[in-house]
Length: 129
Length: 107
Image (tube, rainbow over all chains, first blue to last red; front, top):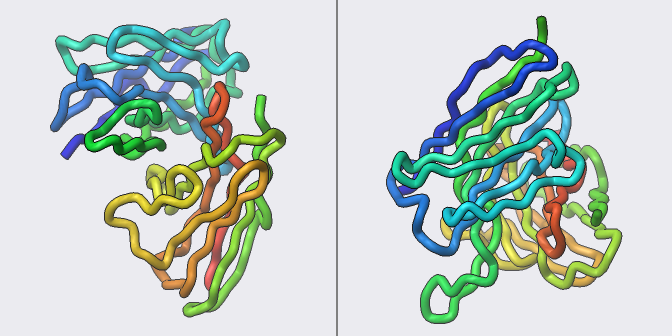
């Protein structure tokens, strides 16, 4: 089955750029019907959706982070990535990648699905000098 | 942005109890709502999609209902392994937004 794994530095200095990669295994990132999302969770807090990308490269970013966020996809490596610029301590969080089912897609026999059904285990990123 | 408000924020119940969590959207979101379970130190897990559809492999004691602005998530008979934080999430409009979570504990 499809699995996702986040990777990247666990420590980033203030004002620098946080870079994470999510590697997809057990399936193709280019298969239709899925968006590929990034979500974060501040320590002891709830979930914040950062944005997503489709395999074609189309993206949507949460306006709260839009000026600092870039999500990209590398279909040849079956990976998608997150870059968050000008980080501060407020960006310290656990970062998750997730597969997000496109609710408009026909998954067969007219079946429509939604929701983020596969998640990576999460990676902790601390912003500190 | 659509605001999602869950209640209660925490809940203590006994094994075998019926547990209900509510989620209210700031705008009509039809049935574009999902529910997740998150255990400590783990990633969230999708339980319910489209307000009332049980995700494959999820026990039938979990259920969801509602449409418009008011939604309910129910565990019909609480099991010890259900201890977790539960989140609702709307996908009617971008950006997606989550409720603040309901932490469920065993009494």
